[in-house]
Image (cartoon, rainbow, N blue to C red):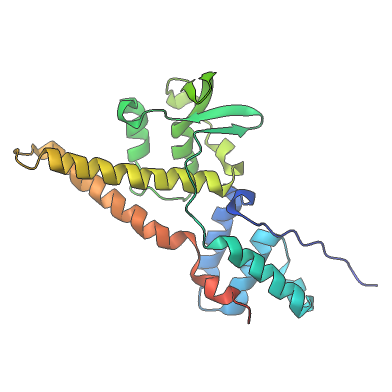
Length: 226
């Protein structure tokens, strides 16, 4: 008796949670990027729920179709910032003005040596997104930052479109920040502590630009039509 297998293929990163994405990245590293069979099996397992043992049994046309669907969105990481999101029916708003962010929030974000989507990313998101307390059309207010009230685990179930939108918002914002600051201080003597801040921001931007290449696994070459 044949066993039926239901395959649910995501069509965008919004269907992939942070928790699942981190597990995918961990296994992709563990199994190596040079083994095409293991790599594709890892992608199909984490993104489509297909057990590795079932892959050889899949008809060629079905496997080709699944790989084509994955290829259709995996190269896309340019998502816009979502100012307000819903988690378990509750609205959370992104920090409305980063330039007026509380010092405590800033410290809790920058204490990590890397700003990247890793095991600490849900903690950063819980600082940036806080419960909405007031909303009028596109304008909104959020709760004051309190490190004791953050709930990082809530963001594990949020789609990667939200996470990508947030991380690249930082990329664009920090790029503008450093450029504007350097322009302003071009003719002035820069105090040591400001120099240190500029260096730190510059390194952070480099990390984010490098991260752009990390988001879409190089296994895209394994998801061709062959």
